[in-house]
Image (cartoon, rainbow, N blue to C red; front, side, top):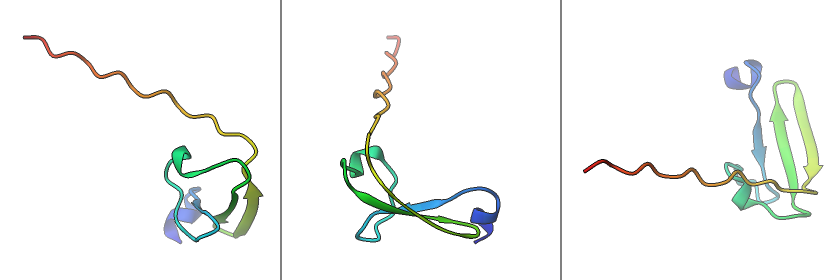
Length: 60
């Protein structure tokens, strides 16, 4: 709860599994987001995934 009061939230899917990555979701999935003063229910309509970071080459 202390984390939520600082402005963070916790989002879970319909199976009450914490969502940590966009790859866990699909269009139409229902989500519940816990805030400091209540819950918000939503449905996924669009997913934008961040491109994978390029790995730096090591100098030999």
